[in-house]
Image (cartoon, rainbow, N blue to C red; front, side, top):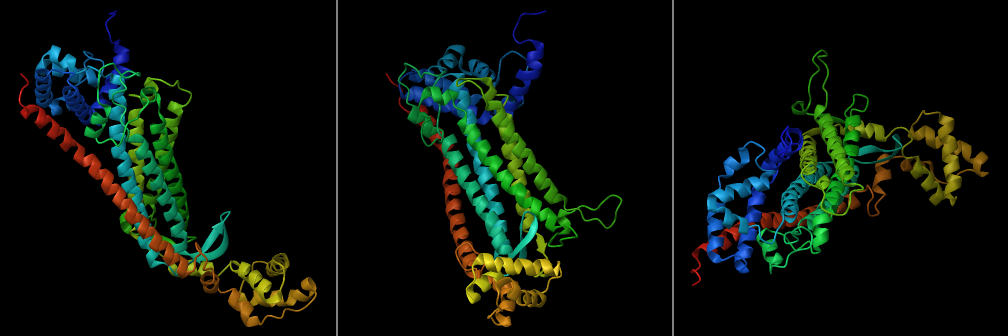
Length: 495
């Protein structure tokens, strides 16, 4: 048995897998880090200008397509050393070896992880924004559409579809806030921390951070290498968003049943049973729930991998974990875009919703409130009177029968007859009346709902601006690298 590194099983189970993952996710950012570090070493006079130019030529000559597809063969530990070996051939081992001055695989690795993750967070924000936009469009169409609201999965009070959707819209707004906070945490440069204590060379960490599109430094060098909260914060944002999405999908799946009949997906989003010709299965909603559940589980796995690990450089947060982070975000994005698409193409059965909003005693809270206002009763007295009437009717609801029963029971319960006109009591049971008098901020009446829609539009505009700014930041930094490379090549040689 050979004593040479790597052991065959180690290469098969770890190194080859991590190598292909790095090719897929990190090759482009790894090369950008090489460029930025080289330019900084030259700028600081740490590398002789002739060496820097030779290294730059070598970097620029690398065949990226070949690096992205070269199979792992055990000659090097990972992609970093594979690239270094190619640089040895391209510009000479002595020159390539000088490029590694004042850095470590530790800070290079964490830097590339952050550079990749910040892109994914922006895509996640785009997915959340598209979901919010679809819900807002639906809400605008249904400001007056009555629906039954539910508590404890039982019919509770009438509200409107727009009111319900605005509650969900606020969830996704907060999810965007969490992603923006995660982006701010992630987009800090650890480069220059080296192994864990920086270096004695006079490097310029701010220069490399700016070249690579970071918005500042992950300052403390120990924490830059050891901290994993940039992963945990992102996983927390993903997990929360997927819980929010999953709860909404669960409602809509129930609404899509024949028993509810509130919602219908168009034929583009359903599948017919292979044996039952009549079936219209809302599988797009089910796939949304499945993908959201998968992303949530992946977020939990990220926490599980990080939990109770030492505060230092550890593999638990590195090559083995990073692909899981990528698939976590990718599955969350898939779920959000799928949901946004089907929401934009669904049909609402407003008549059926209104019918259910007018049943099951859903408005009797307002009847009790009306008794408080018109009769001078305490709410507990009014509640008791209405509650006895509901029990007496035994589920046989109509506005007229409910009012008649309350009037009949009043002398026994209150010790006197009611003074309010029957017309006022009947009006209190009208679901449209129920909704329109609830005008306080956050309520279902048209005025606060329209105000909430305007506020959501304002927030969406602000979020779009944030997204444009951050996207521009990540789009433009490669040009800074190219400009600095051009300056190095064209500058007069030192004599």
